[in-house]
Image (cartoon, rainbow, N blue to C red; front, side, top):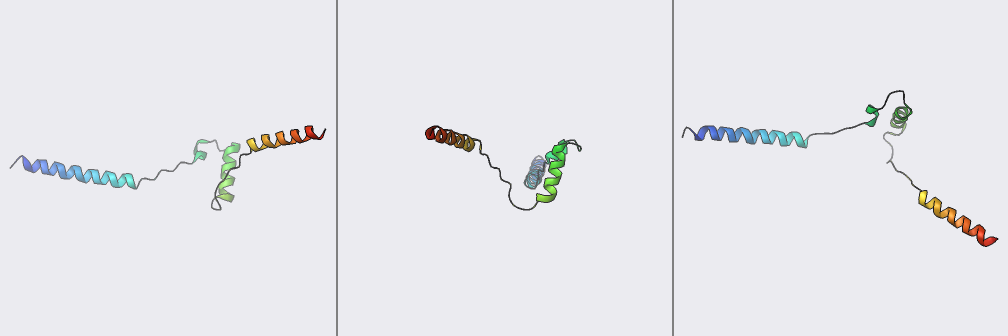
Length: 85
């Protein structure tokens, strides 16, 4: 009987510590701001600050890439000019 009691205490402590660690893992928040790594006098840092000041809470960020469309348009223009002559 004497050897069973410490084993139960160890199991209870292990389960409690495991539960606390799982709770900590679930409530963990990770936040990174790339402006932290830029010098404060750089153009990129100033751009990020102004962007956050004026556009921080409105809308969703989007990007438009039109490199391929531009090449296709150039081909059509060249084709049009060659067929007209």
